[in-house]
Image (tube, rainbow, N blue to C red; front, side):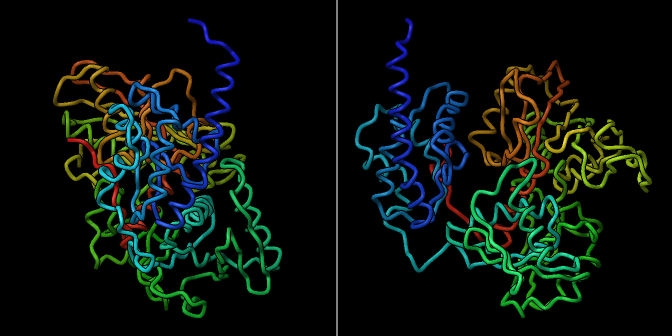
Length: 486
């Protein structure tokens, strides 16, 4: 039956109007109750009308059923009228369940499914003590971490970006303007969502009301953070200069610092943590930890669920990785093999430690994986190709269905994303907050052999994993509702 254009167009406008009504309710839940609303793992807070409609449309790819704002709006309304305690609430999953039962009394439905947090909001209480965060270095990862920390500051204000540390550049006023400009505009990730102002006198940047002290220093030994009112802080070192305990311990010797988190693979006895996999290994006594590498974060969750279900006998990981600042724009001397050749003009075969690093997060895979990397002329988003021999036979459909289910209903929902489209390319994953995205159309499986293609935003997705570790070591924890069905 053909659709009548006037009716379809009017329905679109009506849905836009409903989404517009949802936005202030979602914002109020976030700021007043510290309730983060999502749509099958995708945050609804601070999103546009079109983004909210697209996220509803996305549900059909997961559940095989359409979900409209007409289905979820009554639920969000009911949530906004209740005195809810802090939690992450998946409105999409609630909406699907509400629709399957045929609708009805939205308030009664919410009271039943969110019973654990109904009438539990205490304005004087929180989900943890506020934690000061310092970014040591302000490069690609540092600036994305700043964006995410500022974005999350509204809901409970528990992780507070208090300072960034950079090397002195002579004219401080000019340097501050340049730092602000790099945070404000990004060639890959687009403009900063909000406002940024600069005060040269106090050496601060103010981003969406968050006052960020800019500290100029050539080494940690020069800094006393307590002079800026910073105490018990976590220093996130994203310079990569020090990767062992001896080097990173310099941060702990600074007044006002309690822990150091490295955004690179740690060496020696430094724990390498992939959030979602081995974050429970972090103890209260651990003062230095590593967030491993972007590639390790991308592949370990997928390898974990595959090993749990099918067993991995051995395999090879090939990383097709966007070029980084470590490479040269044009041919020039570089201490690393091949990396001196022009990054925008060449595919550069190089090594990666990601395959060996897997064993630090998943000891059961120690010695079972090899790896190489090819740097390619794209500025962001990479791919890991997992060529695996399994202990069980599997076909493509069963393997993809298993990975799809892991991406939407398992404990690895934040780490594993899933896409099943013949048209996606690397730029479609810029800004994706998952550690890795399984490309179902590319999956190959026959007998005990499987080849998986896993996309990952090596900047943004990795930074979100770092934030999750920050929340873990800062005792920032949220109840996640509704609970997964068993």
